[in-house]
Amino acid sequence: MDTPVVIANPIYDAVFKYLMDDLPVARVIISTIIGQEVEELEFKQRERSAQVASLGVTIFRLDFSAVIKTADGERKNVLIEIQKADNADDIARFRRYLAENYYTPPVKSSKTVSEMLDDKDSPGPASELDGTLDEISDKESGNAFREAQEKWPVSCLEASTRSNAPLLPILTIYILGFPLSSLHGYPGIIVRRDYYDAASGEKILKRDAFIEHLTHDSYVIQVSELKQRRRNKLERLLSFFEQMHLKANGHLKVFHDVLDEEFQIVLDRLARAALDKAIRDEMDAEDEFLELLKRKERSYAKNLKAARKELEESRVREEEALERADAERLQKEEAKVREEKALLREEEERRQKEEALSELAALKRKLKKMDK
Image (tube, rainbow, N blue to C red):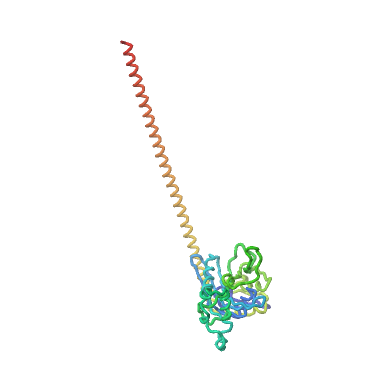
């Protein structure tokens, strides 16, 4: 690149949404992250955001349906879920979002919607399949699920959102604005699954739809760990997200890198975003919101500290009260022991006095006898 270009900072949700709203751009980005060609791509649903004020956390999510071409030339239909989180958060929230995709499958076709309408031989809607997934699973044939998919060819493009369509495998992409403490130095992490024989430990090369639909591959991007590395195509793509050469309160950045030709459309899209006043206003709103969250977080931390201090002081007071009660109980027990000892002494003195009087009386009787 001969001349630096001012682009919008894609770490902002508003910019990232604008970037991914352009499907050709989204195809380039997703293909580069997963290392496989995305042949077809369509929004499954528009973005979702989750904001947790008490924790200062925002999570941004996009869902796509896609046809990808694997390294061995296989065309594979998948759901792709992208989540972008700016702060560390409980993993349960990611799992809950992921579960929604397992629960709500789309309808699939091997052709575009227009092609299906033009093709009289194209299979009908998903409702014409021999039963729902539950019904398919009850059939005697172990190949029923596979047969249903063959009857209704799979693709990323949706004719509707009927819930009885066959499920698709899911790929998850996590773009993190915070580092994972045990994975420093790794800007891009691929999590892939393998099958193994439980008895021998031998790797199983075959794949089965049952397992593929219940487990998923993941791709984790740590923006903070890029640190000017440009070792492969993925790291060159991530240079757009690297938080360097920022200006205008971090809303814009000056991009200097030499680009792969296919990334030019990403650069152009981000350059247009930098000139879009509506997007700049949204970034301002994000900053205001995050500042509000930080203030609330600080207030929460302050209140939590005060509550913990009060709780500790209450615990100390309670322990001191217990110590005083124990001391008083010990004093009472000691007083009782002293009283019992005094009673024993009195009893012993009385007994000794009685014995002495008895001996004196006996001595007097003996003296009287001797006088006689």
